Length: 82
Image (cartoon, rainbow, N blue to C red; front, side, top):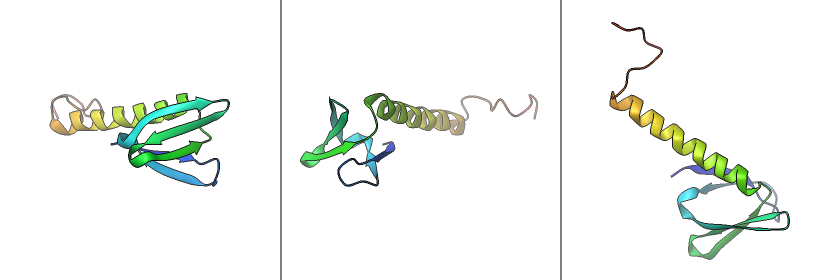
């Protein structure tokens, strides 16, 4: 459930979107439109690549944190034998 911070075109200002509710993303000319659950539409400044990068980075961070907290791997910052 990564939250993605984007900038709206038509209303201006920032919007934070739960990426789980994005159904698909449409690109027309220079406008990126998020089609979301409950028929919500948001036109944003960010290009598709930036939205995908944000979602992937936050997902990877949460997976990494989960693995580290599980104790399945040793923390590379801690010397062996500690």
